[in-house]
Amino acid sequence: MKYIILVSHGEFANGLKNALSMLAGDRENLIACGLKDGKSADEFALEFEAVVQKISLEDEVLLFGDLIGGSPLTTACNVLVEKGFGQNLRIVGGMNLPAILSDLLSVDFMDLDMLKETALSEGKNALAEFVLASVTEEEDI
Image 1: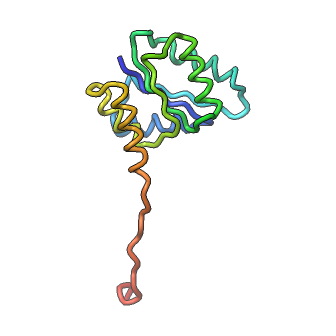
Image 2: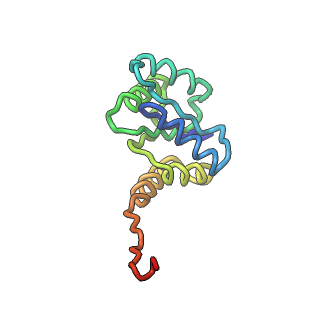
Image 3: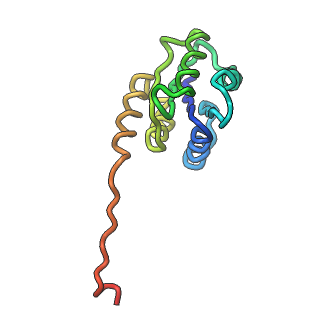
């Protein structure tokens, strides 16, 4: 099975998982874990180990973190590498709803490298300026 794992500071990963569930339904292969305020990286590592316990070395993992170099992502990477994931692991720093949604809907049809590239592309393309049309005084009347 291919798993998509979200890690973040605070509740961002869990909130993103909740939004994804609203759009794509509950998915067994979508896991979220956040580093709660006041908790240490070591405490996060223990919590992360517990939520990924069901994943076997035959499974594939696409790991998303909110910040490259942040404690949640680096700690999650360390845990997965120590468990023996290497070949079956791809890591992306930065995450947004369009990037993860696209991968979640394509996870059964793409390999890990394609999923990683899709997430990077979708994530970048999702950022755009939204311009409101200006309303003239004449239209207000």
